[in-house]
Length: 310
Image (cartoon, rainbow, N blue to C red; front, side):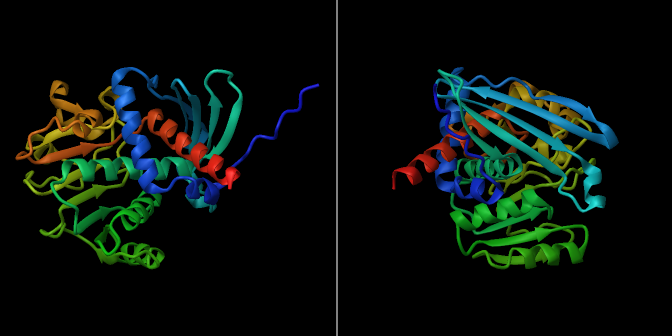
């Protein structure tokens, strides 16, 4: 009789610990190249309705070594019940045998790998390491991005923007232990900000300034056609990049509403390969991909195996 080992189930804290940002960025960069070459299979995510305006998102991906399936429930009304808006898991399997390897906390994987994609965009599309970054939003993704920035560039100035001075101040207080120069902000982005990262689910543009060289724009929050954080003026004047171009055609509300020419939208793999005009203003749109969840799973597996070996 065969003995089956129990499946390791990682909670939120352990999942985050298994995804150190430097290693995760390397895995996402590798996955971007594999996805472009057709070595990772990642179909468009499936969205199913849940009661009370909720959505169940199904995101599988497979590669030569592992396969993953992320199931995430997004339930906006949970905030009024004192519950988190997002719940879910990422199941990880050996590709050859199909044997389960790990079960990861879905929201933690999403937050960490999304921040890693933004960091790769900064490292690739900004000519130098940033000194001043503006984060627009105060939710989980804003906190995850702040933590990732602190890991990568400690001492960085980070402005936290919100429509409410109280929420901006509260977010800064929650992040006070990070090695960052945190400033709560309401209103216009400071001229000195070299990177502006938008992390909201706004249905109307929050930023629509003319594009300019030396400022990288990153939109991560708007993930449906009816959402838009970046306006047409900013988009029209920028060289455009997206983490997942096929997915963006259906989900990137900013770009869809602006009527972009999709032939002019370049992939993350293009950016990593240096295929861009260094003199042109640049805008990076992130809609997410199960390929990045697969990258995170690789990272978590490697960390788990290293811990077992020591």
